[in-house]
Amino acid sequence: MKTRRKFIQTLAVASAATALPIELMAEQSKKQKMIHQVFFWLKPGEDVKDFLKEASFLGKCKTVAKSYMGVPAPTEARDVVDHSYQVACTLFFDSIEDQNIYQTDPDHLKFIERNSNKWASVKVYDFIV
Image (cartoon, rainbow, N blue to C red; front, side, top):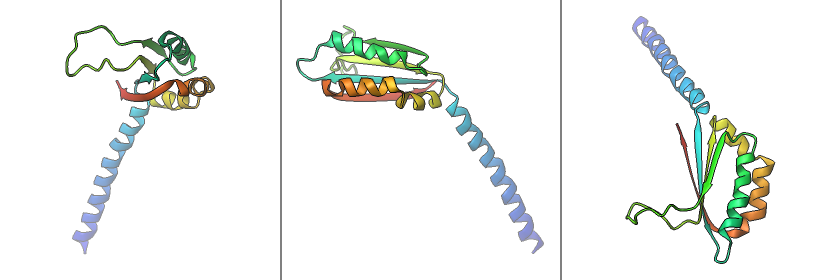
């Protein structure tokens, strides 16, 4: 009985010790800087310059720390390079929480409302740094 009790106590301590780092890691990841990349494939006939102008307003959303908008670079054609999109947006956030706030920012929502009919496809790539 004493051995079983000791085993359960040891297991409880070990579990608590393991849970703390996981919770700490989860909390720290929320505070890590994040990059949000969005690639747009526009519908035929849509003007890239006009769309770039519209997309530039995304950089003015409150939680965006820095932003870049552009078109595919005229780099060498290789199997690993995708030049098929028309517009790319790269937005920098100080945390995942800031990016979550951005998702409901009125300016972001206005951009989607005004422009979602202009793209045929969109892909998003998010990563922490």
